[in-house]
Length: 71
Image 1 (cartoon, rainbow, N blue to C red):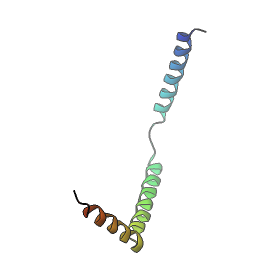
Image 2 (tube, rainbow, N blue to C red; image 1 turned 180 degrees about the vertical axis):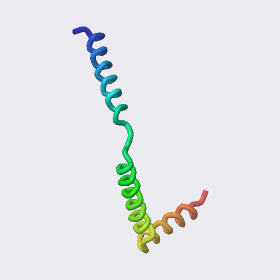
Image 3 (tube, rainbow, N blue to C red; image 1 turned 90 degrees about the vertical axis):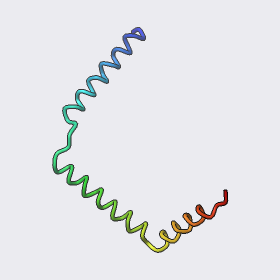
């Protein structure tokens, strides 16, 4: 099989995969709901971590050190 023929076979396979993906490209309402719930849960955990005492203190120290740099 020539190189051109192999490329054509690969391109056709890729086109088939893209077309198949397009048929089922969207999410249903329940998937959107689960995605939103997961995003909100992750945001809540991230908020709790960033507002905890130790992390907050470390972030403040990093900002203070960055602002104290002399140019």
